[in-house]
Image 1 (tube, rainbow, N blue to C red):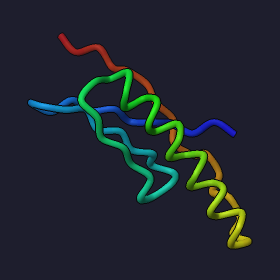
Image 2 (cartoon, rainbow, N blue to C red):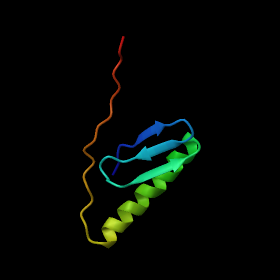
Image 3 (cartoon, rainbow, N blue to C red):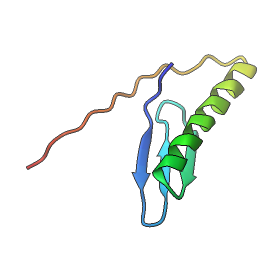
Length: 69
């Protein structure tokens, strides 16, 4: 299953979150590192849900871009 990931840049780091997996986040100094970390976080999150016998959330979030101006 593929989940949408939101990556945001702050003044000193990058943060990533997965809207369809509440609490699944990662923070790193570089975009490359945060992408690697969120991939690991998703795998761990999904494994934990499976271990607990919880159904995996469906991937409902869709991402698009909008041009302004």
